[in-house]
Amino acid sequence: MKKIGLIGGLSWESTLPYYKIINETIAEKKGGYYSADCILHSINFHEIESTILKGNWDTSNRLLSNAAKQLEVAGVDMIAICSNTMHKCIPEIKKCIDVPIFHIVDATSKRMHSKGIAKALLLGTRFTMEESFNVDKYLENNIEIVIPEIEDRQIVHDIIFKELCIGIIKESSRNIYLKIINKYCNDDMGVILGCTEIGLLVKQKDINIPVFDTTEIHAEEIAKKSIEE
Image (cartoon, rainbow, N blue to C red; front, side):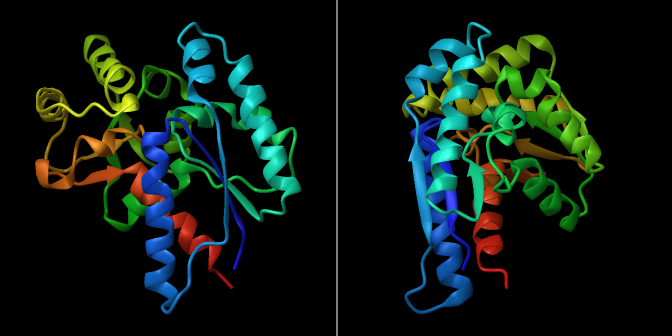
């Protein structure tokens, strides 16, 4: 089995399901008492949140690069970042390590193609929806991305940071998200929950179109990759 290195705490609310899903998937695939060979480096999200909202990514690049270097020294075979938004830091992280990083968009795109979906609404932080670091990756993987209008992007973003990242789950916010999804999606599309916290709020049972929860998909694919021969 490959040793997994997770960079988490971004926020810790969404790191919890990563660990659970990875181990459940390995146990299901391998049977018996199998579980993940895994090291988690959990970052203090306060240091991240307080800087990226001001447009300063230097702290995030430094913290995630240091985490990746420590995981490499610890002997991991692969690294995964338990956050969509923090994939923005990958170019800087790659300068510091030789261990491969398993990208959340590659995992999600693979799952979408397996379901015959090539177009989806992307929900996430403003950074994920407005900047190119993940959107372009979807396009490279032949997934057409629809982005909400600016007012809706701000609503989606605010619910993530003001509620989901600190464990607040509101029915009213779920209804707002569902209204936004219904506004932009038609029957031949899917919706990408492109922030690892959104899956805490919106589930497949809430929507009639395919839902691609990036947390769940990424964690399952990390587990599968770790047990590949």
